[in-house]
Image (cartoon, rainbow over all chains, first blue to last red; front, side):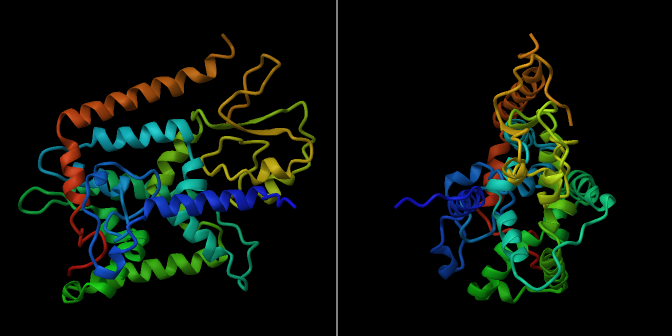
Length: 292
Length: 49
């Protein structure tokens, strides 16, 4: 007897494998140390704190701020180049399949009880661009110490992934760090709790409204090689794709929306197979694919 | 030509990104990334006053 895995289960398996590969140094949780090997030269595709004991790669958002806040450079060609390369190939597929914090939010959303039909206001999805510009690009250049080094403002004041993956595990296992706990930690803990509570009601609340990495990949969704196409001749405008979309996108109208995380739920829900996700253009009519 | 057109912009951006990575590596940005990532970033995890 063979068991056929559904698309949703396959995606969850990919997410779990990606989570495991990103955070493979699990034994560090016991010692309260972090991995210090050469792989940390490279950036993780998704959001994952490099101060997490298990993390094997650098966080792209943290690394971006570290370089731009350094005394030597004001901009990181290396990190931006990595994010740009990954984003222009895969777009927000990275959010949907490879991001550890995305998986965490999806699991929180699965907790039954709170109403799940609520939708965020459209303007709230634009906030992530504000976080990107203000906290990741501007403040690390402006908020400098006496040595001229900039603050990693998003990591320091906002990032709930850092608190969850780095702050809490290290505080629990590394006694020397407990002595330097201050008001900043409690402020960040409050942000983490607020995000978790919001994720009970709204699917991937952080991705939709706060994630600067999602903002970059979202903009690249519009030109990425991995993209969605709508066959307008086949589409019957039944609206099923928009109904199943938990990112509040209408794929038949905006197949390459900045909000689409390429989960593929819409392509499976389409009764006539009018939606196609992939690298290859399937349009055989010689017409250009639908633009977002 | 119509089949190639949609690939032009992403391929150009990809080439630009690869160039940026190479430029960043050549001027030593990797060392800063590594130095930051192998030390516990106290401010990143919210420790400190």
